[in-house]
Length: 288
Image (cartoon, rainbow, N blue to C red; front, side, top):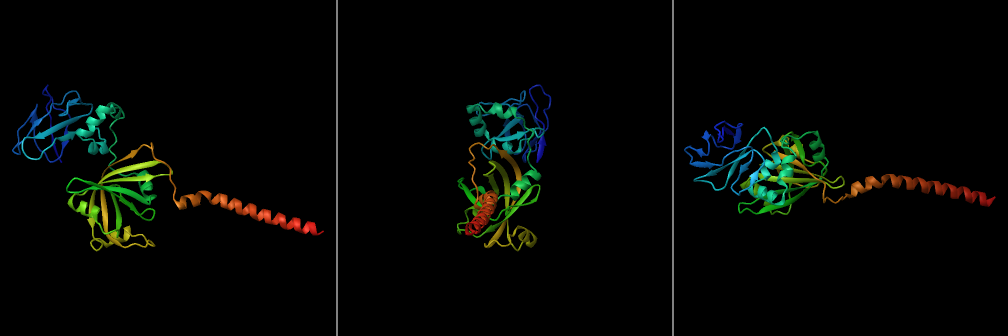
């Protein structure tokens, strides 16, 4: 990443802002660089009128190319991170939030939520899951959401920024693999239905052949699971966030139900044994 200083109307530089692959020095609303990127919107009192006519309550600046790639490119103040929304909250998302009146509420929650490193909490949560949902996008722009399942803990936490799992043979459509070959962006949702908890993850995916990294292949293997891995999918964390529990209906696996009712089974067995003993004693007493 490169950095730049944005000069506001008063001529006093703002905080240093992070920009993706855009090195330049700018004053007021003009940018003079060889790549023909121009037109930067003014930055005023932390509230920036954006191209959609909204008033954004966060420290954003938007850069529009005079020539080259279409669309607005935004830069943020890295001192107030909210990693997941920094990726998810595009202009259209901000417009929807403003239209529904949620933009001020989100701003009031604070932005010190970088969430770019897994902690012990996330590691334990991920290790307990036996499934998740993964979204990818094709070259035509169509999203594809796939359910991934396996033994509990098949999604491995390699370190605080990396996940990996063995990609087992499925229905031979290879839609996710094909999408990730064209673009490495992926989004995951992991759910704990009994506790009504949800973890969202943005990641960049890397397809790794089994023979390219035997150590990783062994690490992601699940002994006893009768499925054939074809490759490894390695996920490099970009941001994560925890969702609210609203609308998550509790569901339980067979094993979770079996574990929950095990004390009842044991109590029932004890009562049946006690009843059998009492019946035996009663039969002996009746003979006499």
